Image 1 (cartoon, rainbow, N blue to C red):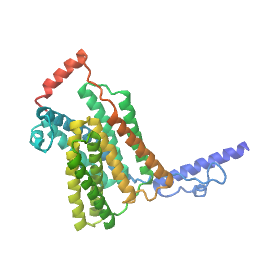
Image 2 (tube, rainbow, N blue to C red; image 1 turned 135 degrees about the vertical axis):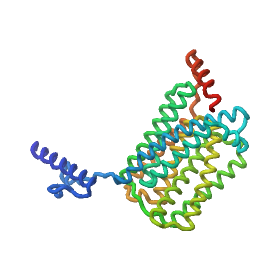
Image 3 (cartoon, rainbow, N blue to C red; image 1 turned 60 degrees about the horizontal axis):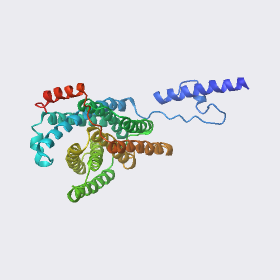
Image 4 (tube, rainbow, N blue to C red; image 1 turned 90 degrees about the vertical axis):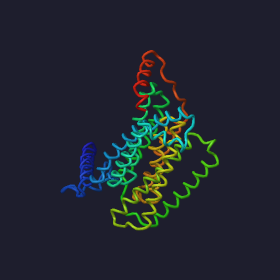
Length: 359
């Protein structure tokens, strides 16, 4: 019996090696083809998911990560610029835009956010949306560290727990997506569905802001910006896909116009969120709500998870719920007061003196 068990262990090990090699090369090594259906226990079959992302598509991953760094730093700089303008005018709106344009920190932050968009578009040109878009969650950690450094505050346990939920949830999402994501040509009916959905969202958000602007809080602005940017990323992916497949026509132009409109409105909501919330909360909305919306559209409308089994879809839902819970915890946690010790006070004074003219 021990010998039989050892034989099954050896055979199963060879089967696993063969399955891995087949996943990498598409060809099962000679001598292992008869083992493909064997496993550790007689009568069971090996069902080992292989990574569906090709080496070419994987090129998009480092681009997405670099874009996340630009997103984190750019958001922090924009937040500083908005804070300076708000402090000087006791309000923030479109009338304050000329004042923002005179703030180097806001301008540099905007340029860096532009670079983040460029890197994200390059990443989408290589890989499926549901693989690269969630990687921006790393910006949440970078922003939290930057904000703690610049405001002389400590990252408390509540903030750490919230970020863990965000990053783990998004990380699980990316892992499952890498196993089952597929890239497919995007047809005209799919683009029409996305444009109709975006139109409904824009009308709803504009109406809410027009009639309830005095009752809206940071969570609304963060979620609104995240949803809009989710559509921006999706439409960018659609346009890139249709250009690559040589399917560029009038409806694609409409998609580009809708992309620009959603981007402008989303940018306005981001600035309003900076006015009332912490930078890490703004980044959480852009790196968690944005990918959840974009990935949801990618799964339901674009069919990028059409090969995923039921348990992968369950994993998507669980991962998304974890990330959303993390964002909610960030939104509702008490904001720690800046350190007031001698070292912090002198450091704060020196920092203010050195940056007042630059910001």
